[in-house]
Image 1 (tube, rainbow, N blue to C red):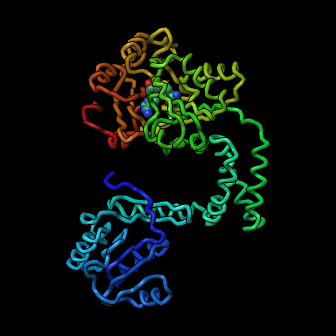
Image 2 (cartoon, rainbow, N blue to C red; image 1 turned 60 degrees about the vertical axis):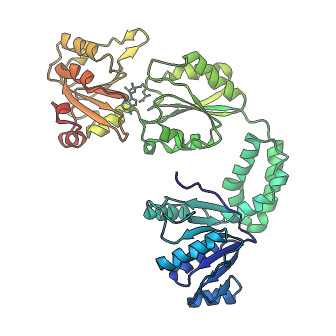
Length: 465
Ligand code: SAH
């Protein structure tokens, strides 16, 4: 971040602008939303500027800037659409002690003006540090659509009620009060009874909240999916939005953790597959402890929590402690990986079943029905199978599997650094070890990437040998 976003107090203070054309008017459209005293210097001024001056919205001085003109100004805009004149007036304003912005000149500006979504007093500022104005406009358009026009009104009335709401204890209860107001009772009151209905609604809501019993904690066991935040379910997003505590595994990506409520306590349980850095019983105890204190706990697990996730132990801990829980499913790694291969998990005439296996279990390399798996056409997705690859390869070959059976390993499925190794059973090792994968990887027995897909994901020709 080269620019730090702040909201500057400008009410009753000076903002000075030099320029009388379109560029000046464009900036003024934003500046005039504030309660600053605005002065414009322009030798030749657009008729709209004269009109704004006549309406008392700004002071128009019909001459070029001179030393001292930007004295006591907090902000100064050079908007002359003339680089030499902009440089001259910027220097003058700088000497007068104002922060200087030169329109369309990022390098020489001391601050930049963001794109704004205005629901005063709720204001969203969007900046891309000059990198992608198109992106900023698009985000602005999205937000304009999403934020109801009434938001500003609710926030203004809500602001006047803050002192009254301070009787509520800080934390969860107070937050629940405000979120019920902004997202439920407030908009409803406005719709049915208009502006006058809002204040009585706040009074009633406060009484209701004061009368309500201590809210019980709760545990959501949430699937974070394979890594791409776009593959989270809406339910998972909502749970993250309201979480007080998020206890996450190592495979959950930083982009997904970013989506948790900003005030949430983030706890790294550091688990990956069966190799765990925090013992399971400690994780169970942690979940229960936070839920019992009244927190909304999100237990965030990679993929789907019901697949190789030690979910049952956590559920049992919740039940033993009398804590309510629910499962929010996620996209499991096998689904993401097969999508990355452009393949189906099942296919008429090829395989009518698919197995999810783990390479490891509590006793070490996991044993399976190798004879059944060795049959032609079988498809199996192997989780945590990197270290067990040679073992699996040996068992399958020993039970008569065709050495030419296609095998595909997908590393970092759904993420920007997704990698595909297409090989055969006889070549699985040493291919896998030689590839030196570092991310989570899923191995498919009996599936090859669809040819075109394979080419697109090719890293080196050798990886597809
Ligand atoms: N509950 C998870 C699996 C947890 S076990 C799920 O449903 O996906 C951890 C294993 O999942 C890893 O060792 C790896 O085999 C697999 N895995 C998880 N995320 C993956 C990803 N993005 N790409 C490939 N494999 C992944």
